[in-house]
Image (cartoon, rainbow, N blue to C red; front, side):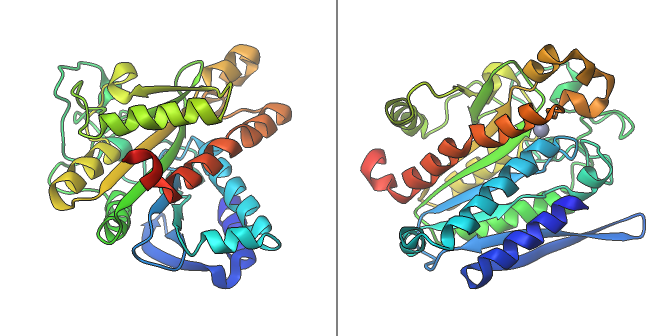
Length: 312
Ligand SMILES: [Zn+2]
């Protein structure tokens, strides 16, 4: 799979700066698919920024966006001393291919037909009749939530990995990249399962102000996920609530939902393939998507590193 090759090249470029971990191996149709995590940074106590993608295999663009950013970061480390100094004060971690079977077979769900972003145990607090919110009727239909007495290997690997960082750090921010919804690029904060405000809503407002002040004319619409999309079993909702119960730190998980309907509107032929609903097909649009979010990622890393300045 080309994405594994790209990841390996990045690992080699990062050399001793990165710790590479195989969190789990998923077996599917006689093949093995490792779930690989990267960790950079020197101290366990540093604030953590996490970049995640590939939860939904069909949304390939998210993994490409994350890999492209990690590759630029690795290139910059070759000559930029300030970036090395930064890694004394922050940890940057990533799992760019969370659902490798989905990616390889161009499907949303994992090998067991479970939608990993519906896999956590919590159910929506608002009545929802739409299958898109997550369903338990059949694995043959999309948005299947899986068996609710256990979670999938991929979900458990992500949860355990993030918890290991939350345990030691006072502050963590993460970004999980998706595509396939809406005309604009959205930045979602929890909850997806409820209309209630998260405990850290004040920090969300401060972050939004900081973003508006620092990246003029940015393209993002910030909103609570349930404003657009009420769902069961969102992993980030689950991790956020678990962290509130277990730790006294701050965790802010963001989801970047790329507004892929614009690509279909501008190039209706995209609708001829299933993948076209989730990924830009024309080369110039692909390149534009790769460029477009660089400043957001830099900004998230800087605001994680300097969290004390704007959260207090
Ligand atoms: Zn998605």
